[in-house]
Amino acid sequence: MQDSTSSSAYQNFTIFLQKESGITLGTEKEYLVKSRLKNIMSENGIEKLEDLLTKINLGSNSNLKSSVINAMTTNETLWFRDVHPFEILKNIILPELVENNKINSLKIWSAACSTGQEPISISMALDDYKTKTGKHSLGYSTFASDLSSDALNVAKKGIYHELAIERGLSVQAKEMHFTEHEKGYWKVNDNMLKNITFDTVNLKSNLSRLGQFDIIFCRNVLIYFTNDLKKEILIKLHQQLKPSGYLFIGAGESMIDLKEYFELIHCKPGIVYRKI
Image (tube, rainbow, N blue to C red; front, side, top):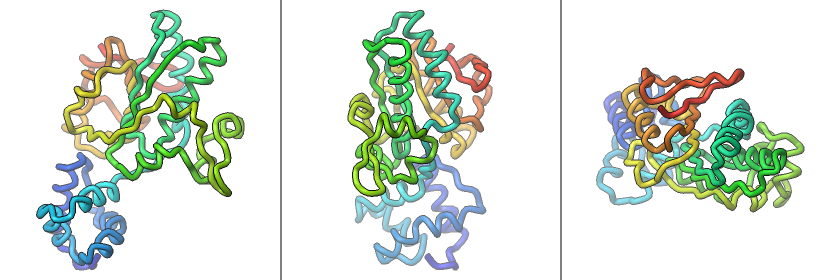
């Protein structure tokens, strides 16, 4: 991409990206756009950002828009990210739902699941809970979604480089739940993947088709949205939760004056929100 990219072209690109994905870019992010779109533009013989937008709008290349969205989606993740949500799941939420309310099957949604570390971590946490409590009959299904089809393709395969494996995963969990696939790569065992369904979902879209869930993880994605869109999505997530269902958001994310929708539960350490 040329350094002479015009301010108006960049502004039009930020409008396009927000409309399609909800992601908001500040005025200081031109370098990010240039670096992430460089290969796509080179492969398509495009030199200027305005020409890229024109080609997308013409619809002459059906894969171009999705490639641009994939390139601009941040897929930073690791196993058991922030730790506390998974401990809260095992030690507080599961005992309440399973042991107190006698629920024998759970529906969980991992929204913005990136390359799959979060939903697979959820499977490992549930397996640990079942092993420690003897609740082997507990059933569950996890719906894992992301806007990036590239990230979901990695998640579906469940094959990770050993450097990715080391990010947050204990040696014990690696030995228990992964098998060496080829030199330098490990594959998650089928029993950790069998209850997970992966699909593309834009959080801006109508979510009612997904049904309702006992627990939703929507972590470290709301920070990329405007406050208005963030509030809109949180209200939609509220609608997708079953009565008294639980919502996890990122450690650096806030609920934005939605006290009539969610009750804040302090778990010391960590927090979770319960549907009102």
